[in-house]
Length: 202
Image 1 (tube, rainbow, N blue to C red):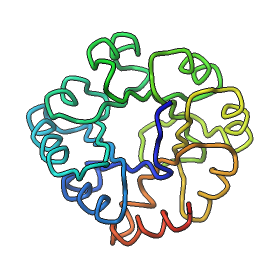
Image 2 (cartoon, rainbow, N blue to C red):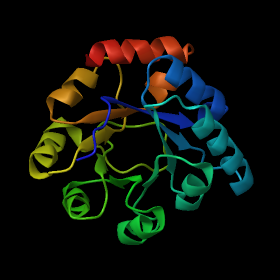
Image 3 (spheres, rainbow, N blue to C red):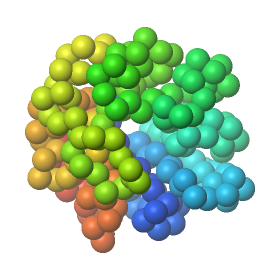
Image 4 (cartoon, helix red, strand yellow):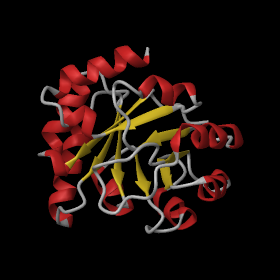
């Protein structure tokens, strides 16, 4: 089973240069960084992903959101896909057995299906209302998260509206890891904020 760090960080291009964000996250203690840059052209995404993967210290996992091809070309640790991307089976075939593959789900049925798919972890959300997606799915809440965590054998990454003041409740519901965007990289000093989240999770 894939061992995920408690804090799953995301270098989101909507908040600035993902390369600089990733550097600050790692400097703050992050051990997994997903590169999420939905509006970048393919060439730019490749150059940014390559730079982040090349600079990552030993033991830090770098994943690329949506793009299996970019993850492979950049030398990343793996990729994260959504419900509208290539199916998990096709994604795994392209990515190979030695890379990490995660899948986003938005409710119990999708999460249960993902548990049987060739992925290493299942992202579940949004747990709370989120501001980092256009037309997000409805928030599932902590009770539904707890039920899903009980049903799944694979690690669950909780995402969506998670903040420093509710992260402990999310972990108590059974999540293996928490993915945070706005309350982590949108608060000024990313390095210091990462340290605060890690302290809270410990």
